[in-house]
Length: 217
Length: 173
Image (cartoon, rainbow over all chains, first blue to last red; front, side, top):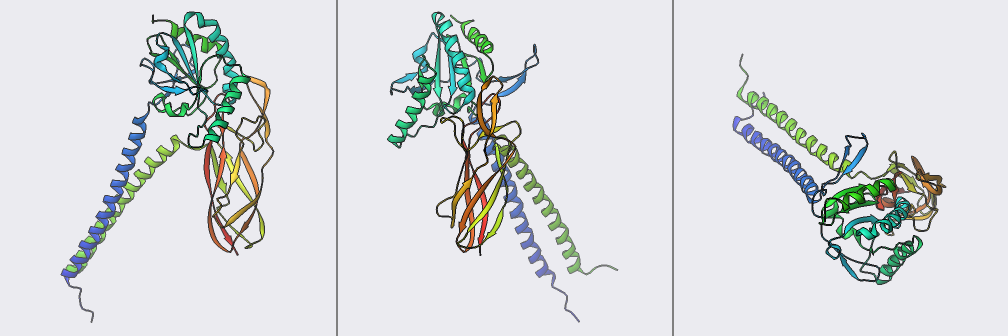
């Protein structure tokens, strides 16, 4: 005849099982909380853009959380190594145009920007072309090659306005710049009045330039 | 007739264990859902489909076709883009993986033009595409983490160049 298992030993086994399961449950909960907080931190780190439907036309439009706020300050080098900052253009209506040499839609958009910049220059409009091409500051030979590539693009398209490099370094406060071209329109008071992602039309760019010229002296 | 005390304790332990296991499973499902939500926000434009595992003769060249899928509405430059400034799609194998990539034959690109510039023809891949590779594997099991570099666009915007990992379990026999 089998001897019954003593109740004391059963309780010990039960406690051990419960402890292990509780540890698993705690680990699962901690993992969930950690991921949740990490995701929240990532979302909070950069202003998130949204796509919203325009009431008048029903078209989907890019809505940047920067609209109505001061343009995030930056200081970047141009192709000659000269430091240019946003503050240098205080009092201008600005188009901050993020682009890259590998971006075909940017190539289509740039001549429109040049024409509109020349058309509105007398009213104080300036375009700052900000290249988001990778920049390798560790390797001088590679850096020179990357600069050459950007310069070739500038020359090909005969860009007359300042072109700054290393746009990636300022992408975070501008919302991440996951798509190019992306432009921000800043009025004379330094406030972002419009933003645009992707290739739209020359008319839309002109309409945004007019917004940057309006409502600020 | 009442159950002996040891059996009652055993049954209670089982019930508690099942309840805790269900609770744990629920936490893990929630954690996975959170992870998927985060990943979907940065989902790559290109996904590696298959093969996950292959067996090839050790030390001899073998042909392996790698299958990829591009997200709908997007295209990537082919291996031979129409413009030298555009970034070609390129496959590479790490040098120390135990598997050598002898050759990669890329499919020809399809001619494509952006609606706002119909005159400029681009050479792109869209949908699914296959890269035919010739590899030589040493004897043994090798988890190769190959890389595919590409640059994706849709009709109006481009995303920065990206490199995805192509994991292949290569068994050299």
